[in-house]
Figure (cartoon, rainbow, N blue to C red):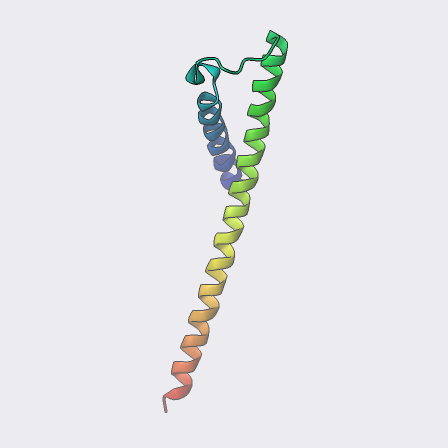
Length: 88
């Protein structure tokens, strides 16, 4: 449960950073939505979508690290079996 909460808040922080980087001020207002409502939909929708994307990415990253740890444990167990079989 704690890992999920940490992943969620990391996703929120990353989404705030991504939203700040996509703010039109940084690009001399080259892109600006036509109406204020569309501007709100664009940024709120994008913010929520980015939270989801970061959260799923962190979940996949955890899975990759768990699989890597399992492979290392299996390799260590095989190495231990080979060295113990070779000794009298």
